[in-house]
Every structure is written in C-alpha cells, then in structure tokens.
Length: 438
Ligand code: F0G
Image 1: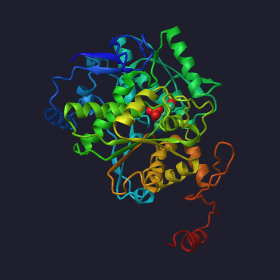
Image 2: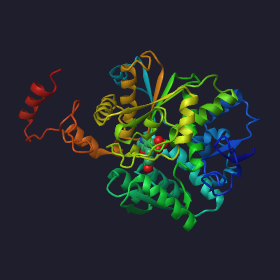
Image 3: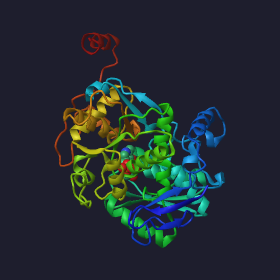
Image 4: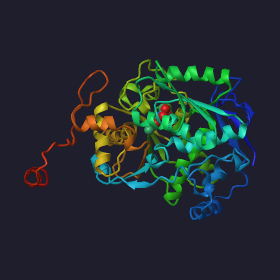
C-alpha cells in the first residue's frame, strides 16, 4: 500500500516521500499529513478481522493501535514497531457525571488507561516506530508532561535515546518522575511551552534529533486509532458528539482525520460533531473560531490544567478544518468549572487529570446554553490519568486550590481527610455520628 506526506494547505498540496525527515512543507511551510492509497480496503472484512485480532496473542494484534494497522499503513515493514500494548482503553458509563452536566447519558473514552497514563501513547508508538524505521537514534519533544513521559517510555522500549524539554516549574511531579525513570535526558527550560517548541525545532534540525511533538504527522496517525477503537467498541454506531480538550490541537486534528477517512471508506455513514474545550486562560482556538481568519497567540497562557496551557497551538489550521467540517464547535471553561467537573468525574469512580475534565465542564455549559441536546449521544475523551496530578487533587479537596492570579477556588465537592487519635471508640463514634450518617 503506497503512503506519502501531503501538505495540508489546500492551495499547495505538495507531496513528499514518507521517509523524508520533514515536519512542515518545504514549499509553503504548511502542516503535513499522511495520505494513502486505500483502494484495497474492504470495510466489512476489516471490521471482522479487527474484532478477531482482539483474541490474538500476537503483540501487534494486542496493541490498540497496531490492531488497526490497515488504517495507518505508513510503515511498510512492521519490524520497526515499538509497542507497549497501548490503546485498549475502555468506554465507561459516566454515571452521575452525566446528569450533573445535564445529559441523559454520557460515555467516557478513557485514554488515561494507557501504559504511561495518557492518549500520547497512541501517537508515540507510531512516532517512535517511524524513528526506528528511518534509522534515527535520538528523539526529542517539548512537553508539559504527558508527551515527555510517553516519548521517554517508547524511546526506551525501542532502543532510542530520549531528550525532553520541559517548562521549568510547570509540570506535575507525577509526569516528570516518569520521564526520569524511563531514562530521558531532561532539560528544564526557563520558558513556556510555545517558546520551547520553537527552540526544540531549531535544536532537532541542528543535532539530527527526530522531533516527536504532535507536529510530527505520524503521531497524528496513531491518535486516529482512538476514534477507530471507539467506533469498534460501539459496534460502529456513530455518536452525535465527540468532546475533547484542546491544547496544541493534535488530538482533534487526528480525530477529524480518522472520521473523514472512516467515512470515505464506508466504515461509517455520517460524522459525529467535534467539540473542543479550552481553558479560559489559554483559549486562542476558541477566539479564532469566533470568526477570525488567523490564530492570535496568547502570549502568557494561564491555567492549572497544565496539559492544555498552550498559547500558540501549532495544529490550528488542521483543527479549524476538522471542527468546521464536522459541524462542531469550540467552548471555553473557567478554572472553577474544570475543578468541579473533575471532582464529579472522580465521584463516578473514574477520575482523570484536570485537562480531561474540561470536557465535562464544557458539556455542562453547552447544555445550559442550549447548544447541545440533553438527549444527545455524547462521548467525552478523558485524555489523562487521575494520578498524573495528585497535588491539584489534594489542594482541591482540602480547600487550598488557587487559580492562576491567586484567586482561591471553591472546593464545592471537597473531601477533607481527618486526623484522628488511635482510639477505636472515638473513631467509631465519629464514623457513626458524623461521617456515615446518610
Ligand atoms: N490532555 C492531556 C492530558 C494532555 O497531556 C494534552 C497535551 C492535551 C489534553 C491536549 O492535547 O495538544 O492534542 O490538543 N499535552 C501536551 C504534553 C502538551 O506536553 O503532554 P492536544
């Protein structure tokens, strides 16, 4: 099956071999995307084959990315695949979080169940495998945490050397700890995500290091499989909405591409609407979609949801196209709304990291504004694991969470731990009289 890279700009569409080490079109600077000759694909056969592979013990079949290899056929030879059995993430009933948001039913696709705890693993297995296929030995990324943890793991698993760049003081220890444990050379830079991405692009070129941020088109290919797996799990019933948090906008770009391809190949006969939710203090895409032609970068993005603390998202042209062509929209939410939504997701026994909770907060606002039908069939993608940001959680539940700028957030659904003496009678009385009453 032939594969190539094509410039995403509709007026350019320059083509490049899939083996070029290239991240932007060298003619117009546009984003690149992988394109394939899909003419041999038979959707009904593949649906059966993909289902059959769930029973297989072969590593490629056990991966929730490579199981769907026919839809991401950029490698040719599967010998370079580095896999940790990524994907395979559950669709979970949102429980009480659905009525809290105003929905009759809601499903979470929980990407936090991935090997390193976020959706980045879906993309990173592809990025790392492409690096191996190209014979490159070193890989780099800038990250607010999850990308670096994921890249470090896949590099280590694939025998590559990972170099990560993180904004100093703006990453949770849970994520940084992973990167250190997986053996990444870790540089903490006194700059924000957007500034460091520019720096890393220069360094990658200068030092011959393969760049594995989501500007890398093969990361996007892997993230497409989040949608393919979700549709497979839903027996190909198309939801009305897919809701996802937006930072650098790689994920929504991948989701839109997956939906376009699945539809044109006949796997599905309509597209869900894509809703992207941003944090109020880091919402350049929200502003763009209010009618501007070009994205205006936010110079000092601010949010406690560090994973989406991005002011100059590189993939905005793709994201704009995908949101518009799905009939979707972009919302923004406050820090308080994110914190409360996160606590609700926790109370449902599911839990997620702050950026992921922007989805539920955004849904609640859309329902309240009459922009989403309470009867709609909605899937919200929870992008990262609860344990990625324990400091945020502890502060929320103990009434110590401050928004950027210093405003104290309300712990509306707080759950304070209680210090007690080692005394069975007093503890029993406390439990019976105060804690277990309802
Ligand atoms: N959710 C989580 C948990 C993330 O880690 C990220 C991105 C996003 C959402 C935003 O996704 O960029 O595709 O729109 N985290 C990056 C990182 C920035 O460095 O780990 P996007």
